[in-house]
Image (cartoon, rainbow, N blue to C red; front, side, top):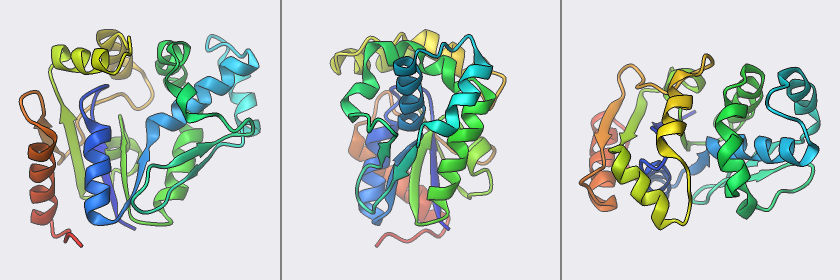
Length: 214
């Protein structure tokens, strides 16, 4: 099992870096945020409010959440209602995902699926707590960051209003698996770097740990 854990705050560039690294290595790529967004979307559709965590926990086994990961491609997240991926970034989901993701039952539920996927194939997995809580044993830990101003501008260019500062506060202060830098992680600020520069530095670091490129 080879898991490259790429963590960091919202809009830090994790997704672009993860896709490029996965394509270079021939690994599958898993965005753990897509699973949390799928859970959030399902709870919205089912009318289960985040303020009722017991109701949320009871509903989780009925979601049919599955992450399908193939080499060189983004994971596909499926549920019993087969959510169209385009809806996972709806404004309602953006506004509520941090709240649902903070619930311990939701984190256990999603982490179980991430562990299943990580046990089946080499994978680049991105999120907030991959290197700290999901796969703390992996030696391949990357933490991607950027200034709040740069991250807000990136979200705006995507046409999204993600309230970066609020997302940071919620992700960093939650009780269950808060956002933080994993011990031994390679920390990289992408504020003044383009994608090629970021990926080159990440690949150099992975090579220094003995991970060969294909």
